[in-house]
Length: 139
Image (cartoon, rainbow, N blue to C red; front, side):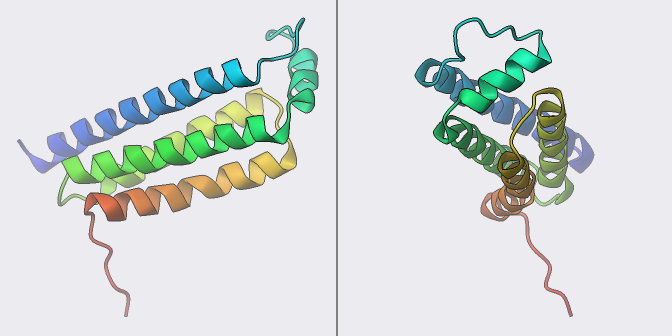
């Protein structure tokens, strides 16, 4: 298999696993911290009020899930695409874009935005390193 095809497959599998982890964590989180009764998910005002009433732990669990999913997706992409270095970065960038889209659609507190944005570069770098993508020394 050519390195390009192997890289594309690695990205797709990395994204698939990352999204599966995110969905699983958020499904469990929704059971532990359900939205308040009467929340209308189609109404941004209702969703904003519901998010404001959730304990910070509920949002922290989402962030942990995002970190684990990005780390795992980048790791898998790096592991499958050896020696290509672009697949884990691609996974990280696409997951970052999805997270920003999520935060734009659903109101989140400022602290969530700050941590949510910071998670992806760290998790992607760590996943790529653990997956075997070499990091070139500078200088």
